[in-house]
Image (cartoon, rainbow, N blue to C red):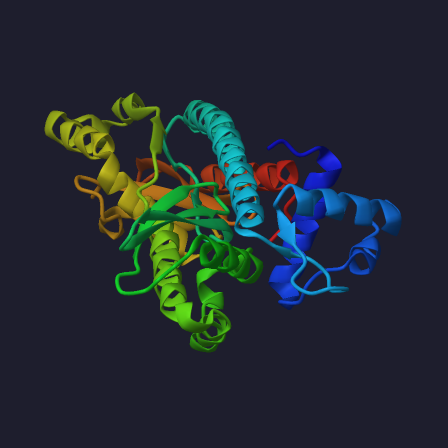
Amino acid sequence: MDLDKRKKVILENIIRTYLETGEPVGSRTLSKDEALDVSPATIRNEMADLEEMGYIIQPHTSAGRVPTDLGYRFYVDELMQEKQREVADVIGFFNQRMDRVESVLKNMAKMLAKDTEYTTMISGPRYTDNELKFIQLSRLDSHHLIAVIVLEGNSVRNKMIPVEGLTVTERDLLKLNVLLNSALQGKSLDDLTISFIRNLASQAGEHGSVIYEVLSAVSEAIEESTVEQPEVYTSGTTNIFKYPELSDGSQAKEILSSLEDKDDLADFLKTAEQDSHAVKVYIGNETPLRGMQNCSVVTVNYELGKGLRGTIGIMGPKRMDYERVIGTLKTLIEQLNDAYGKNDR
């Protein structure tokens, strides 16, 4: 049965208020909500219509209203549709944004290789300070729920939550979703302390075990997103042939082989990222990459907004122009900080 916009807003307010208080909701309570912007008389008329349509009931004479199963069903379906739209929106935004970031990093690698006449390697950004945006619990079968977890980096994880031997109704699911999103939104892995988890599980009552399972899934999702292997963009690999000590046949072949191994490059850049945001220089055997004994690599970390970090590396012979390379990287980081609204470090 279709509801007009006003009835939907009033029904949603009744359900939200009832979930928070556990008490029947009257027109006087609703009229205090400035967002409704309607008179108490109008609210009473709309509530009477909603009751006639079967969405709410009046448990006692002169009492307020409480949602019926039909009312809960409407609310859950609306909530699910809203979350699905939000997931689609953030994934679309993320894909567009990452396409732009990829283009920027590729061009940056080419520019650095051309300006320095060395080889450039740049790791794609990873979210290192990931936070939860929202979570949606839905029924998978009689023994499992499915948790859709959306993180600050707009990455989405689906985790199965076992509930065998525990009854979880649609009303329970709704309450758990409200509890989880109100408590977890914006929380990072460091925020999920033992006391926080116990308190949240206590609020869930008989469904406290579900909270423990969900928080374990959230922690796992955040850890997975943090350790993901980033893309690596390289440019100027043939620049090594400009330097006699690197252009020897076997030496050049080994260096080119290392530069083609993107997993090794990603591991190296990820290690460099953990050191600091300062410029770091690896000389000869200090570089863990194969075949780089006669090379130096200068690295610096970049950040594109909150927690979105990666590393830039410039590789050349040990006699590279360190002053020029370090100056170029520092200038680039300052420009990135200005472009993305960050303060100088």
